[in-house]
Length: 418
Image (cartoon, rainbow, N blue to C red; front, side, top):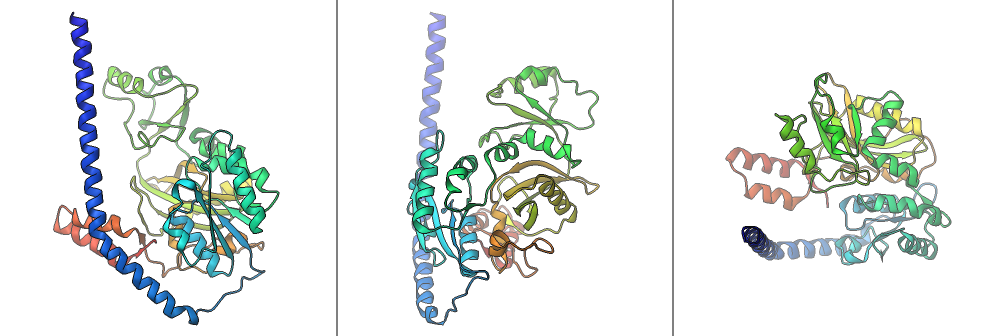
């Protein structure tokens, strides 16, 4: 009877928790809809003003011709601002832009941009990616695409690599092959690849069993360690619990709650104190064509270029050593002595590329065949980029007058990424 009562109590608690979660979700959704309704008149006004200005200014626009001839450029990830930014840069340089997104996001506002000539949807990549690859290839063949630039989500980057052999029959694919993408996306393999060529990375260990952590001798280590899932984990990626915990029991409790296995390996990485920075790099045949660096944070919606020659040298050495062609973004910790330690790599476009909104050389960085003297970086006149509704929300939820004016200054001194 006691066991039955205990099970009944647990089930009752779970049911209560589920009801509470549903209630919270309901109120959050309702609040979001109310805020969207409040913003709707402003949005409509801005759209109408933009349309009016577009009609008035259209006859006076000069059509640019691309140096080396106009190309047809296919860009994926159409719902993302970084895809819109690349589309605008290509259009401004005189190229024809095909924007692609999965069926779910068929009504993305970016499809209506003046920078976009055609918009198509494709199936979401899944399983072996065959259907996704075939859909991209059909568009490339039908539209006469010259180059495909994937703007990937964490999941799609590998599928774009799988699609590369089939797609390459019709156009150039500006992306890594499958083995390279797998290596760059694997936090441990990336760290080892950098370490092999003498680049600075934190000490790292691949963990496939909780006992590897519990049996590790932390006594001779000068820094604590953190655990990160090697497969992308949106829930636990911000957990920076330092190891070892205060007691062996606390360490064991923490480690055993994590889904560590040979199928889902983790990386135990040395935690280095310092400033977090993130980068975006566009690379062709091992040459860094375009590079930017910005302060990093967990909620990354603000970008302002930081001049960090040591980080640029790190990225240049890495790209040259492996002769990459594609785009990747790196996360760094800049230690107190200025040494940059790369902590992970994402083989895809970074939203920091929005800082190139007023740079005329972006298209050539992707397409041009000639060597560059040095990588393009955001112009000195480039303003920090942000997303206005994030800033408005932060503004109205400011907890002090100081915070309020800080957010106001960010809005005034920067520019909206969209």
